Length: 329
Ligand code: SAM
Ligand code: SF4
Image (cartoon, rainbow, N blue to C red; front, top):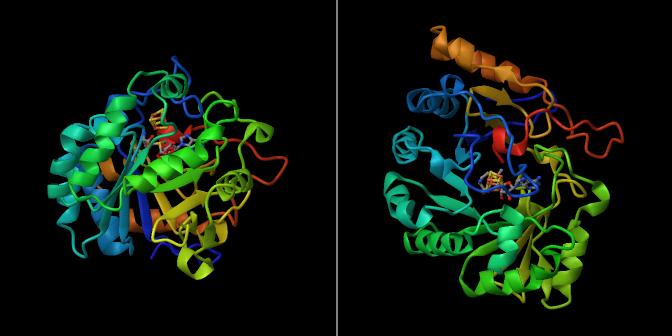
């Protein structure tokens, strides 16, 4: 098991497949100038599948989520999903994507064994999308969502980050639209993980603000602690259900006590937390002929020292050197 000194057990693995992206969301990346990981440093498809196999068969991981950067940019994605779906015990497989290109690949991903998908969409307005992502691709995301749903990747989840003065007035409209389309919406508080270090606590739209805005137009009934488990999203039934909305208050309502995550970056580093300032290099061991037992031992050691919390509430908090796009969100 991947256990830490606080007794938490990591069963949920996030794998970043690339740090590159075809959007430039302002809360994530600068317009240009971000240094990409060097190609030779990226794990190959075989190396990724081997790491996932070790996590699943030797370390008790039960859920694997592929992310990035934009995971749909990884040419071998469908093959990686297929090979991971053949593992025993079969892990749950999911993907977080910006949805661009999903209209073409959703069916193949489903057939390869993908169980679930989260698609990021921050606005219903194409011109606001262009401001937020610096690309005019709103229609691609909407088409991607529809294709995911048609392919049976239900429930399709929609991830939304609200930015003050840009899309923060859209929460109720987004919820109405998502419910109407049978997707499930989750708002994520903006976190200090942007490559350009522009995050300001005072600018952040808080979970409470989001709930207040939604509460003016919907009746929200909390689902409760027991349903949340280790999930970062707190969930509410919308107008009595069955529709739900989630809010991930990573900054103001942290969930570190119940965290069950372990992370593998595209260049083979294990991280015990999004906000960790250190990581453990497993790529070198992987490429030096370490056997599975040794790799598992290194991974266990990497997780053992996981801190109690993200440290976000500490005035001395320091943002990690790697941005979200290179860690895998
Ligand atoms: N490119 C894919 C996407 O956008 O869904 C996957 C990677 S992205 C880093 C994963 C999620 O992190 C997205 O839902 C995105 O909105 C969110 N995200 C990125 N930067 C963030 C930040 N600074 N604070 C909160 N969420 C962020
Ligand atoms: Fe790309 Fe996702 Fe970051 Fe937006 S949030 S720039 S889509 S990696």
